Length: 245
Image 1: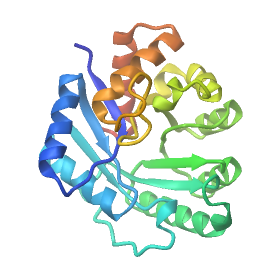
Image 2: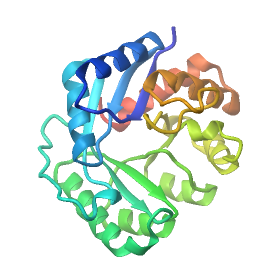
Image 3: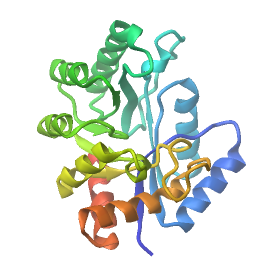
């Protein structure tokens, strides 16, 4: 069986049995490693819970993303974390909060730099400001669930970032993501579910989970003209290097 690394999945912390079942299904599907991502207080707790239940398989991150600009933000204990995030900008959903989003993003980038952690970045319809922030606070890490165009992809690669591709690449409307996914060098591409969101074809309509990563991996291997075993091994290596696992 091939082994895969889900570079971005979210967990809830209020149902231990559900987390354990999700992790068991992932292992059965060959997803032997997972980055449990934070982004708000609940996601941060969920990531910590998943790691505590399977420390040999799960890494954890914590941070605050653009959806928390009007919410209380608890201090983060960065000890034991492999990354900071997710964090970033989304002007598609809330263009009226650009300034506040940018302030929070810079704050989160600075905290990650202070703690010498790679960052996990969400960016949508905010190409210029994302690049501006990353030049203001030089950082390393992953652009998760990439949905931009090829010029943005090139600029992020030039800054040293890894590009993580989600199940969106399997959607009919995602020509731009497929173009970027073919362009990213072998040593800079990661794969993810972003579960519980964005289930890939043929699982659309279901609650996404790490076990579904195999569908995205198969699609991307075909898109890039490589064997699934080679692609899987490369993305595991890349993700371990991105998070220094």
